Length: 214
Image 1: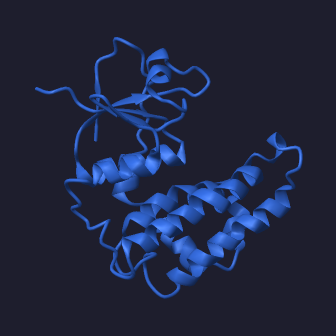
Image 2: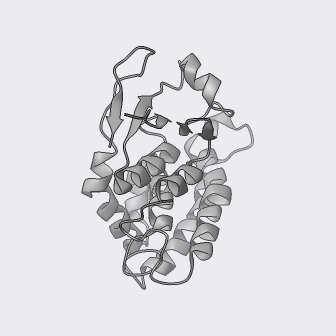
């Protein structure tokens, strides 16, 4: 039996969640190593150039970006057509993901962790992050998923971050006028796929028996 790819992960990290989503939907087994961010394993630090999760190692290949890991998982098998959106193109999907990973994530961090940034005002950052959610709402009013009637890469790359935004103040989020986005998020959070990637794994230590995922 050949050595499995190794995925260094952290359960709650939205980047790691989206990597696990893609691996789970494909069903290609990896060895999952759960990392505790305040006490990172030396083997992880030796592997990850950025010392951030997720990080995947397959032989001599190291992927240190979550979107790269998603595309790696889908490279040979795409059973649900994530790379074939019903509407528009994969390039349009990647552009929307870029907006999530860029401006939205910037304001999300400064909203959720405002005390870490001397110049961050929580309400201002909340407002600025909300602009991206309104972009999603415009799409989701017209269709069930971001690029049509079927979920695709953009949905699963973006949903973990919208979930993080919502959970920063769920009461406030639920009061906003974005009914379609709330329904989209609820469908994700109650899905079998999401539940399957949110199991609680013990902290990985060198010498532990391998944890297979999915």
